[in-house]
Length: 281
Ligand code: SAM
Image (cartoon, rainbow, N blue to C red):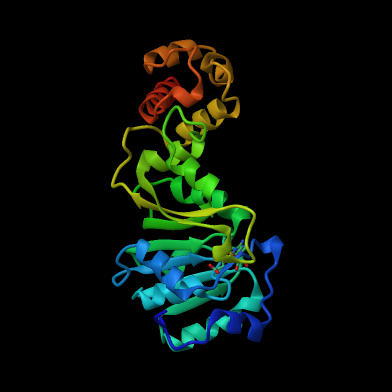
């Protein structure tokens, strides 16, 4: 295997800095630097970009991103045990790696980044979906990021790219596909991680579209879809009745049969329904 840098192997880094994996922090580390370089390549051309990485851990993906030429990496890590290991990487790539010891749900990364910005992360599973929804639902579009390259449990990855009519289709598919292109670019078995999780994983690459595929108010769409899929087996006239006393009229105006179920309605239909409800106030 080719060496991607002159830093010590990740097993040695973990041993030196005492970074035994903690389940509560969602720590399943990638120790194969060729694999992390591959994930970094899936993020696209990094040479003109700043990269936001959430949860660098001992720095496997961080090293991949830097070796693949990222202009700058901002890495936000909650576990202070990882900081000395990340400082060692920063010293090997002068001026290109900034580390923040903090909670990615609370830190505002924008103060430290210059566009164009790509996001790449092997996310802690417990906050992965929440971060994705935040990245997909800013008040203004296009967002600050041009692409997201993110590791998820395979089941979550499938929900992001799911099509209408499938079991995995729901709120994540609609929010992701409304304003981005989303593809699974890599599948990984449990053994790719240390320790090995119980489930398989996949890397999803999302590219922000310049404008949403169909017009709709983001908050209304998000609320409609969350309500519709909360009771996905019910007919929409029943699952959505709390949204408006005239819900059947709104469904018909949007071209949706009131007796349909949420999983059969395509993105265009949900956007039309959100517009109809939003216009009615
Ligand atoms: N990127 C490393 C890799 O690929 O080997 C580690 C990935 S591990 C799945 C997730 C990382 O996210 C851990 O290092 C964990 O400490 C960190 N983490 C967990 N919760 C976090 C949070 N709220 N904010 C920032 N980092 C967090």
